[in-house]
Length: 246
Image (spheres, rainbow, N blue to C red):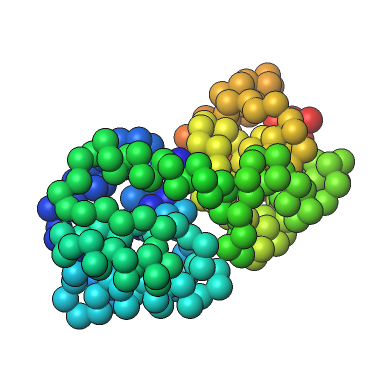
């Protein structure tokens, strides 16, 4: 699953693009104007951008130039999408666009273009670099985490777990980013362990079912509902963590 930014002033076309791309499991973020897109891009790094050329105000070609001027965004694949003629496509390619599609375009052609670029580019890492495989992602994430035994020990205490996650987030390894790499009903502990240390992935229900003590029944229910162990807790949460992550 990839995060795709769609920039187009036509709301009906944005909706159609979202339907097509989200149907393939991608997360679609919409921007109506180039300015709105720039606001989003100041904080986020999408996996791919679908960009209309002809828009009011700042046009798509100007926006493309602004995108390519940012080092973090320089390698994000960009598909130019317009009915303005192939001459615009040539200008776009000169500015750094990866692909040019003329309107109207079929859903099949759009899917082929998106999947082709995503598979070519691999996985976008924090900082804007790319990894060709999950194994390369594992190496990079392992560098941002302590050694395996230390990681397990830190996770069992609320304070050290919060510090660990804060440090990862500061480096760009946010929970949202990790879940885009491997979508599924997994606890963050298992997701990190799988990506960094090669652990098998356990569904949340399997992980929580290991707690047999009836005192923890309500805590387990809350855990399953939230999808992860609460970071704010008390002695009960700490004891639950020691059982969940034994």
